[in-house]
Length: 428
Image (cartoon, rainbow, N blue to C red; front, side, top):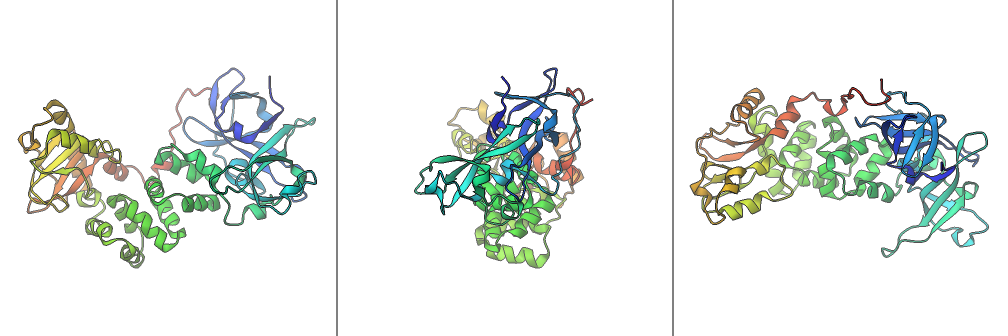
């Protein structure tokens, strides 16, 4: 049976179907128009994410039914124009949920003067076929790790939900962060880009350094620079420390020299030194593309130890595909480079064997000044996803991986480009 009352948090992620049952996408948010007179806000429509990850707007007038697990439309033809938020509109999940509000309900005297925040909004289908926000679920701020009681209040008794008040800084992000749990950094970066600028910064501030560093690395260059510039300077340096050195170097390379140097000076010297070395190279050369922290081992390492190292979940699949063998020291720039061992070879050998006996010493390493075009041909020629970079004295400086090559081969705006799949139902 189709619902006439529903909470917006339960809509998030629901499949959106056309009238013939064809899948169009999934609900990601609800667009409402907040009024200043405390009258129930009208629900304008849904933000629906297509399989291509583009987010579009679907008016509520197109919604035929909201049922458990699915939202059905009365048409399979939808506008593919990217959703753009209009003045006066607010996103229920991205902007209203987590807002601090005041409750002025005579039936709930215990909430008078108490700080509470929004955890959900109830919407209802009216006799005029409009959907309106009629209820607000609120909860007191967490104390000592305990979840406070949730109260459901009529919209008329809630103060603090105007565009001006929601636009003030310092809004909580608890509910948003819960949505991001378990997501890959690239997916979190995509969702972060869809948030209004204020909420984007609030989420960034709330993430820990490691998580934020992973997410920043997945943003376009200009958005990396913009976000870093909005952080407190000490926090920006901490995030750079947590980033992969090659990504940190790429980001710092986009900043004015003085600003980049100031951030480097705030970083731990052990973290800033490899970044400084990378900045000495052209960004479109093997030296500029490489990471100084591939898997580096000595000849006396056993196969079992090598396999344990490549199991590190922090390694990308490309970097885990090959280990590099050198004379001590193993920190870059290392001792003399001896060769490499592919993971397939490690899997074929007895665990107790030493990797010094199974080296591939014939693979020619890259020089740091080799241009991107030559690096690309190198990977294609030898069917590699990772390759060593050495200096004139045959010290290993780092390794180039195929993901870094692709990042520099693709257009600068490749994250913004969406290939619409032919044959998606309802998109003809």
